[in-house]
Image (cartoon, rainbow, N blue to C red; front, side, top):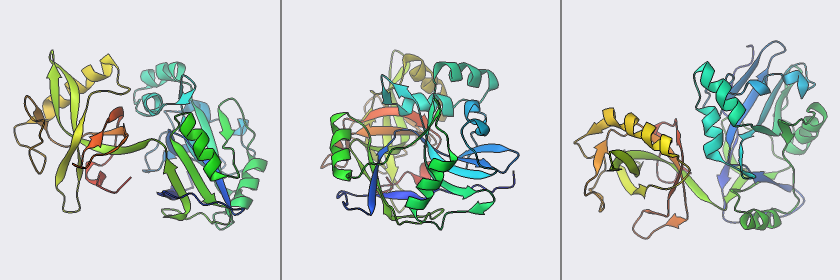
Length: 314
């Protein structure tokens, strides 16, 4: 592979959506950010943490079926649907598969769609310095949508799209300045996001059991001094009975007597502590005045650096 993977441009969080002809709005998909690299010979899929995921999505590697470029880098999000809505839990079943036999099985069980929204490299040249409106036009000229690959739609009014997303319980919206260039490893207000459903990635610091099986996880985030603070416990969400059994086996060797949190949680009776090595994505309604999550719901185990799970990092 002659193309070196980059960290993609990221949006910042906003409470106020801009309006005007220089702004476009897109659906914020609850999926996995993925860049496709094609140097004319080889195809690689790499996520925003620079981890390769080519084997996990074999149906997307036949790039000639949907892209007419001689070489290209495409940016988008891979989603999986559950009852007609994007499900992070379902797409993580695909993304988390490692063994060949599991990848083949889960590919049949969980079909995915690649929602493309940007093009960074085209026929041997970087196009990141072009304004977004020109990159979008190039993307439409280069990519032919299929059952598995689509181009993310643009909407003229961010506010209207946000209301629609709210009514349908979707994750939120992304708003982008149509004049914006693409900044690898950048994050600024030229791209912004507003979430309907709040979420974050938290560290597992403990658990409780029922009948010998984990039934709730005790969650935490780090502060700037590196201290892990308890933010609540969660026992509901997308995890299946088998998921909870697998988590039980995973947490057993990490169990310890040392409290990982900076302070003893109020709900600590019959709790077990673990070395803070595992992370989960959690949806929640809001922060309580006491600094914990209201109605947290576990979406999936994720492979994130626990030390990067900090307050204000979402």
